[in-house]
Every structure is written in C-alpha cells, then in structure tokens.
Amino acid sequence: MWGGVQPDLPMIHDSEKKKSMCSVMEVCHLGTGRWEQKPTTGNPPMIGVTGYAAAAIGNVIFYFGGYCNHDSCYHNILCSFNVDTFNWKELSPSTSRHGPMMKSHCDMIAIKVSGEDYLVVIGGYGPSFLYNTPKHPGAQYSGEGLVFNRQRCNEINYYKLSTGQWILLTVTGDRPPPMDEFTLTSINNSSAILFGGDTTDGLSNNVYILNFTDTSVNCLKLSNPGGSVQWPKGRRAHSSVLITTSSGPHLLVVGGVGAYDCVIFDISNKSWKQLFNIPDIVTNRREHSLSVWSVTPTTNWIIVFGGMRDYLTISDIAVIELRYTSDNDWSTSVIPLDQYQEKLQERRREWEASQPVQPENRREIDRLRRVLQERERELQEERREKEQVRNRLQQQLQGIEQQLQQAQQQGQERERQAREREQDLQRQLKEYQERERQLKRQIEGGQQ
Ligand SMILES: [Zn+2]
Image 1 (cartoon, rainbow, N blue to C red):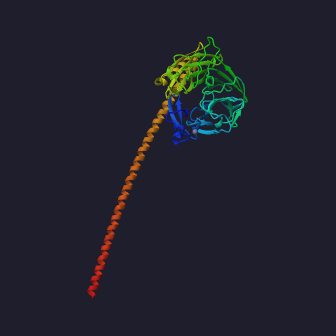
Image 2: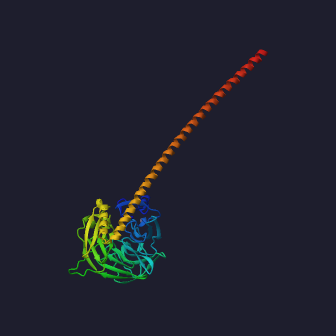
Image 3: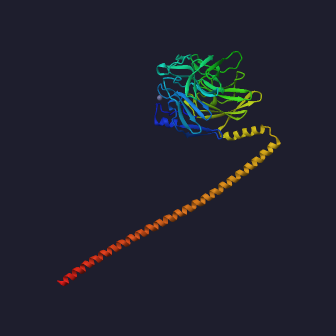
C-alpha cells in the first residue's frame, strides 16, 4: 500500500519531507498479520500522491493520475512499481498536451485481450479545459454542481503496455455518465464491473458490466428494477473487491459516503444481498483500502485499512471473515487481531480435515511429516554445531588480538629504553668532549 491522504503530508509540489514520505511502501504480511514499512528505489509518483488509481499485472503495480495535495495540481502520470525489486519507473509523464484528462478519483484495471496487456482508465475529476488535456471525441465532461473550474469526465482510455501508448477506443451500449469516486473491478481478463460513484444526478447505485476487445468496449447498465427486489443505496468513496465462489464471481462492496453497510452482488444472477453482523468499524469508512485473501476455497478474509471517518483520517485495520455456505449464502464474522494467527491456523486445519483423504495418502502424509520433523531436528543440530565453532573461533581471535596488543606494548617499551640509553650516551660524549677541551687548555697553559 502506498501514498494517500496522511495528516502531515506537506501541501506542496515537492519537498524533502514529501519525498521521504512517498518513498516508503507499507507491506502487510498475510501469514502474520503484521505491517512493515519498506524503503523503495527510483522515483515514486509523489505529484499524484492522493486520489490515484492502481492496478496490478503479475508482480508489477501500476499507478495512474492523482492529486498533488496543493492548489489545482492534478496529474495523468503513469508509473510502475515492481514488488520484487521495490523499484519505481515512470512509464508516461504528466502532461496537458495529450492522453487521459489530468485527474483524481478515476479508476483503473488491467485487462488482457488478443494476447496483449492493457490498462483501462475510466472517469475521474480534475481541472477544467483551461488547465487540462484536449477533449476526447465521444466523451462527456460536466462541471455542474462542482466548484469553479472543475469537471468530471467519462473518458475511457487504454494504455497498451507493449507499445507504451495511450489509445482511444470505441464505446458502445450504455456509456456511464461523467463520474468520480466509483469502483471498477475486474471480473476476468476482458470484463469488469463498475458500481456507484458521484454524478451530476447525485450518488449512483447503478451497475455497469463492461466487456473489452482490443479496440472497443461495450457497456451494459443494470438499474434498480424497484418493487421488492433488494438493491443497495447510491454511494461514493466506497471500496469493492471480487470474490469467486463455486457458484461464480461476486462483487463485495464496503462502506462509502451515502451508505454505511456491506453488500454483495452475485454477478451471474445479477442479484444483491446485504451482509449483516459487520461492525461499524468496517462499514463506517470512506476512501479506505480493501483487499481479499482466499484462505480456503470457501473462506475469504477481507482486509480493511485506513480511510476516513467523521472527517478524520484513520489508520486502523480490520479483518472480516466471509464464508460461502453450501446453501448459496454467506456467514460473516470479525477476526480479532490478537487472535489472528490462531484463527488462521484453525481455518486451515478445519479445511484440511474437511478434505477427503484416502488411507494410503494419509499414511504417506504421516511418513513425510515424520521425515520433515527429522530433517528439522538435523538442521537445528547443524545450526548448534556451527554456532559452537563460531564461538570457538571468536575466542581464538580475541586471544590473538590480546597477544598482538601485548607485543605492541613491549615493543614500545623497548623503543623508549633505547631512546633513553642513546640520550645517556650523548650526554656522556658531551662530558668527555668538555673534559678533553679542559685538558688541552691545561696542557697549553703548562707549556707557556
Ligand atoms: Zn503539485
């Protein structure tokens, strides 16, 4: 996790403090539930530090656009971050000359069509044309209800990774209106689901299913049919993740402005369900991050971090468990952070126990487990022996160092004695010379 609104983030284009705050990546280790701050190399996109959009392909995370945290400074920069090397790279610079609108609160996903990787950027909010890129043909822009010199758009752009180019595409079907603060979530390589957002007509509760080809996108709008059908309230600044079960893909939506709840959309059946027993600390959030971790094929852990509550940025984490039950329903519970590892091991054991295992496989598993334990004991023994050798060597080294020091001191002492002896001899020599001169003078006196 990177960047975002932080209480002491400098409200300035560039500064040493901003650079140092933007140069760390927050890493949550799923196995332990612990967070770690790790330094990065290269240039992080600190000009788009808040309200950016992000998407991942393999071990690379892409960051697009964002707000610079001062004045009217919005961007359309595209950067990549490699999670193996922790290095940043700029792929496309921020410019008002071409490309997608300079904006924040748009969204981005990665797709793969005809064997090519693309990033798709949709919608967003930013400065009006006076300070922005030229209009895209077919797209709409609206500043209605917004502060002076701001606009929302419904641009849809591709970025083709193999050529490094922004591409305009043909949009067919029900194109979403200009909007921001919605969520765009991949369903598979070539389709995605868009939900919620802020529009000229207020908060949206419409769903759009998008199908991509290499030159076009087709949009299908699903609205509340009314009557007794369950359909969620409109919202913005919520978060969404895809959850896949044996009955197909689902979209989980948590929190946001306009609705503090937790709802799930069955994408195949096009039906919504509200999830209950989710505490306020999870649902009463906006602009938070949301990740899903499949602990077992039927158990997903949803990790909620940060965001805002009552106009304050918050930094607390919550983990909720979502279990898909055999009767096509969901059970939910909260994973207390102090019991995180215990619960994790419990779920894995439960799942392992529920797996049908043949007796001969069970015997083989037991044998391998014993082999593993034996090997671990051997390794520990080896480690202990190495430790002993190291200690012995260290002691020897210390002894040699002491001897060396003593020898050095003795040498210095002998040198000092020799110098004293030399000074003595010189003094004696002077005395003899003086004595010689006196004798000479006496002899010369005697002769006269
Ligand atoms: Zn700036």
